[in-house]
Amino acid sequence: MQDEVLILGGGVAGCAASIALARKGRSVTLIEREPTSRHKVCGEFLSGEALEDLHVLGIDVASLGAVPINYVRLAAARRAAEAPLPFPAASLTRKALDAALIAAAIAAGVRVERGRSVQSLSRATGNLWHATLDNGTTCEAPTTFLATGKHDLRGHGRPKDTHQWVAFKMYYRLSPTQTADLADASELTLYSGGYGGIQRVEDGIANFCCVVQRRYFARAGLRWEGLLAKMQQDCPHLAMRLDGAEPLLDKPITITHIPYGYLRRATEDGLYCIGDQAAVIPSFTGDGISIALHTARRAAAAYLAAEPAPVFQPKLRSAMLPQMLLAEFAASGLNNAFARAVLPFCLRVWPGAMRVTARLTRVTQPGAIAPQAFVN
Image (tube, rainbow, N blue to C red; front, top):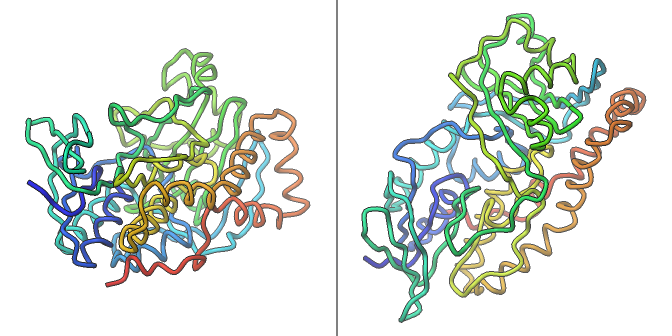
């Protein structure tokens, strides 16, 4: 079976690229390993550019129950400071967002295969990419978009994470008092070995997602209960927020070895790498979904303009490098004990600093590049 374009991965980036290409009349097959949409380790923050891109794709996040986010709040130990965000933002579970994007892809004419994992991807005779699936069937196309997120395909892996980051995600139903206090803020909490974020999502629940270094997790006994206790000890503000909270998952969703700071340098002819396969920004910035959409949009535009993948990929890297370095610098600074101690105090003195930081650590900006690739 041969198509014009084969897209591996049905997350945000893969779906966005498939919709853009199908709307331009391209024959697209998308392969997604999960049979149904599910919860994923993700902060679920939708920045201004993400909202803009999703609107162009036909996704009405408000109708899906997205919660408006108007403030960012930073908490370390017992101190906290907040500032209004310099752009519109919202919060929506990945399960709801992914389901809406898959539905939009199908409506655009994309052929979607769900519940099928790709075992191998290779370039063979005739300059075609061959993807072998777990049921033994093969899909082929002259062009492939690699959008497998944090999961690498054999032979197409990224460098290993040297810091050994471990990420956890848990949903909570907060107490009425804490729900009201959290309100419309995205709240960042700082620890000696990482950071976390908590914000409301649809259906009256809150998403708590944290990233810690493995040595910090080891000091907590390599158990979620111990880690949660240690984070609350390091940051009593988090303990206050979770007081009386009801966990809604039997156990947290976990992912390890996240290569933060990764930016793909090069690729092969006919292979466009998007989403986390193109760039992995520190979770601290909350820009992951925006990057997925941004890289999908730019890759689709490059393909439609007949720009070869080996030309597109380094151009994308160069465009994203300055803000990626700044985001890494901001995130790494949080592991400094002195910075964690004085930062909330400094931000209380100059709340505008948080607005500046929030804007500068956007890898992409709303309206910076017109999302023409997503338009019918």
